[in-house]
Amino acid sequence: MSALILVASTSDARTAQEFADRLRATTHLDVETITDGAFDLDALALAESSASIVIPLLSPSSANSDAMQQICVTARQNDARLYPILIRSVDHVPWFLQDLRLIDGTRDHTQATENIRSILDSRTPERTFGTASEAYLQRATLKSANTIAAYRRAIELFLDFLADRSQRGRLPIHGRVTVAPDDTPLSALSAEDAPILLHFAEWLLSESSGARGDKRPYKVSTVELRLAGIQNWFQFMDDHGWLPPEFPLAKAKRIVRDELRGRPRRSGPPSPPDHIEELITYFDRQERPPHLNKPEVDPERIRRWELTRLRNRALLHALAESGGRISEILSLDIDDFPVRYLDRGEVLRVEVNAKGGHTYQLRFLHALPAIKQYIEARGMELRASARGRAALFVSHDRRYDGARMSRVVAWRVVQRAARALGLKSISPHDFRHWRATQLINAGTPLDVVQDYLGHRSVETTRAYYAHTDPLRVDDAARSIGLLPPDDEA
Image (tube, rainbow, N blue to C red; front, side):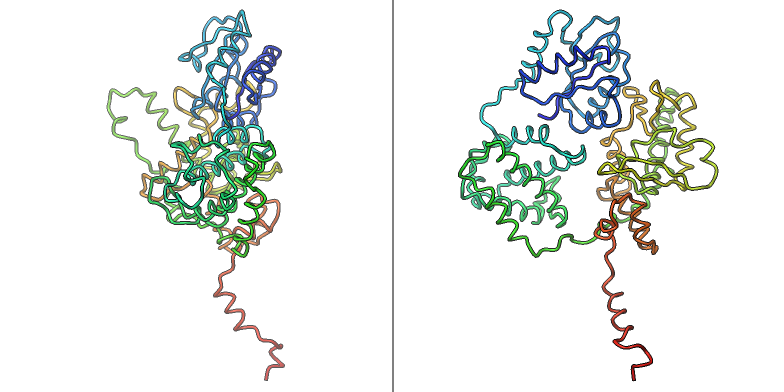
């Protein structure tokens, strides 16, 4: 199970701490508490990426809390489970909790905690790959929400590897896998399973089975990333004494290191998908669906559809021009785009928090008209929220109106546009590779590309994108002799 998050108003912080302590003691889960006073983008990112269980503490003050609304809406968008506890009576249940069962905690906090514990059913018999992965993702010291997501994906692939019937007979563990690989006990590992990390890497590099979602073979750089995640996970399990003593983790690491040594670190620069330029302008020319053209259609539905189209258009223009990561683009606020700058025809620089915690500046010029049109369509009254900040990209669905757009929704916007154009799978990050490739091909110096993309080191930029064409190297060998031209005779 991923992180359990308690959400409360600042005035209920003491009650929230009591519930958190009880839940830690009775469920043995890691419990995070978020209140109005501690609510920021990091807290929202935690709810979006890590929380599979959210417990709102409902009271008169929290019913009107921006933090409560944003986190609950984000959790529901990402299919997290919500179990609201009523700690003080309210006149009405807020709209974002209305269809959920309320647990009564107005008189007895202990009983309310016991009800939650029963619902979660935290009894764990034997440690399995599934429970070990849940414990790792919620307790391990990971650098960021994005790192946690990367490790989660690595573990998902490892479990797919364990379940692959084509691997039966290669290692003893494959014969001991249950119907659901995450239910397989860790005790099933044996000394003969020492090559398991190597077999996992080779499986990632092998041809796809053709099954839906099987994206093998992966690039060498991707295999290295996933393998590192699994090695860290296994080390975590070993440090906690969960791996059977007969399984030799040090030997497993040595086998995969020795066998893969000599392979190139990277298989080449990321290649942007073909025809991605068509995707950038897809929403510029998107036509309204026929069912919205009927006379009896509510004008409000048409308005919301048009707002969504303008938002998606601005999103794709912003991704393509800035080369920003999706988390950086979604962190933008309307106040980052002052009206007086939108018509100047000059580059607008916006500072964002980059991967790794440092800051850099996204640059916008050609995307500004799309952003301006979207802001104007939303209306001036939305330029500031109760907390003094209004997100640039928000939901226009009636259920989540005004909530900051999530990474999941942004990914779906890009995917659906790609499918509509008959293109292969394209992700928001592909726009970053496309922009970097554009800059490199235009002869932009590496240090400029480094600053543009927000890389801390120019070596990162060089490793990803600056791969020289071998034919240009051949031309240099032919054209430059061993001696100065005057001495060659």
